[in-house]
Length: 508
Image 1 (cartoon, rainbow, N blue to C red):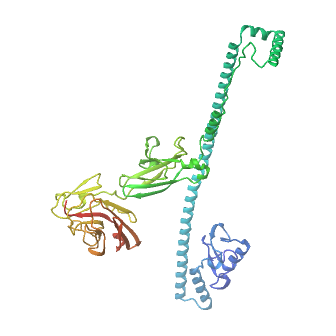
Image 2: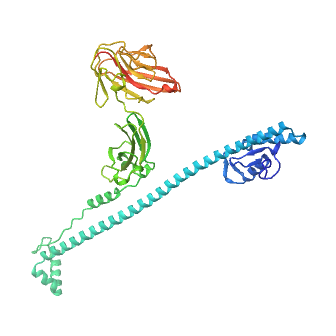
Image 3: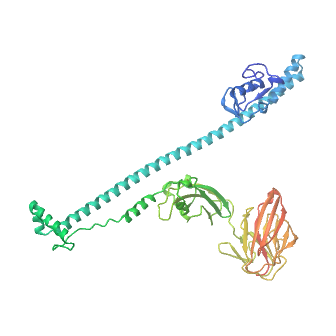
């Protein structure tokens, strides 16, 4: 069919009425009348391409929602005009423009369809891989369970048979020891044996007392309590559950928050579920790029909660995580989960001396200890700004700073957040791009003091700061001291949202 004809009925398309051209995702063009007939025949809740069926599916229920081919309508209008009048150079130009526009739109649509098909193929490929792997894993687990219980059954039966054989031998030996020589003679002579039995029965009827001889017997101790314990042990032996899956791997400054889950927890009894234990391991590197024999995981967590924060990680590094579970501390560990890969990009929360001075030969007014987490003012000459090792504050997170000691309060004293607008070589944070609390409890934003005030800072105070993004250019910043909180809105351009945490004190 020509581009101006319906691909189904081959009739000429028009710019209006039932022959209005409508285009599918597969780029086939049909008139509205044919699509309506096709939908009526199919009686489906979706609209499919009449020629390709599965190749193009529109999740809409109204034929009029199928996209109208606008460039083609323009082309049809031009053709209609040309049929009524002579062609002119202007008309030809308009037709060429409409044709080019139609061609461009067709190519764009084809490119989109190709990208969509590629994404679908990739997703289907991954799904097929995981389905195949899950099927193989289930088959392997079934084989292991069958082999294990077959071996256990044989071991239990062998142990019972050996025990029975030993007891029977012991019984035979004891029986021989109890029998005297005359008893053996009696057993071998049936006439004497019958006479002895009759005499024993007569004496037992005439007298309730023991007769002259002493009855010798063998006692066996059958204790069902041990049998119950064995059955209970078998009932709790082994368990079947899904291998845990790491569902969250969220980066924190110098850390990763790791969370995992098991989806079929109903397969495990409630009492076993309450005792379920997990083990998390970490490896520095990409496990998929390493030789398996060279990989050495390190256990960083063993416990019942299904989450953990892996701390003290290097910046700009790759880490692999895996997890496994067991039903109780006394059972065997299950199989390891699929590794989850994470890349660190946020610097860890540390103070950095090299960042607060542009002059490397300047006297250091702070001493850094505790692996960069503790800053101590060691000079009282002038106020100095000290900031974190990078823009490591994450919006929405709460950072807490503990005051181990504080000198004489100064208006320049500050604890807060700052961006790159701040000139850190200056002697205070009272400048645009910084928001902080002073030692007197006042809150400053972009160099201006707020009307709200918190208690003056004291030794042992914990200052909590949290900045949440409300809009792309506005933050809501909260300062909390001694259970009292002040919240301030802070307007910042998007490119200034990367923040340091910073302090400024004069006295040691």
